[in-house]
Image 1 (tube, rainbow, N blue to C red):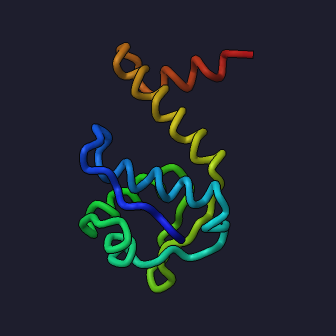
Image 2: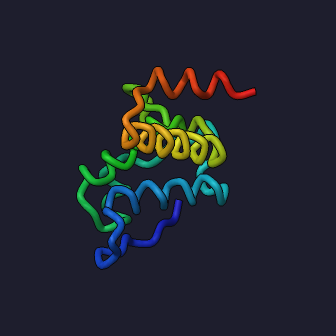
Length: 115
């Protein structure tokens, strides 16, 4: 997997840039479903960031359903870029609902009522 170094002058946080680069690598076929990613320390060296920045990005992608962590087996690609986008949009919707004063269960009820 080849990734450019992150841009420290960009307004986007470093961990978000790392997550975006991994998403791009998956979308471009550099990391296929079922494939293991390099260890976080190696990704950090490639990208020129701290290992904790990479770990934070990997957790974001795990929460999006794109990656899976298995002790002793490393980090594997389990999702698709499309699934990642869907999870990102759902999280955006949840954030918007919270800003508007809605709880998660209220949002779910609203979604279920749409036909």
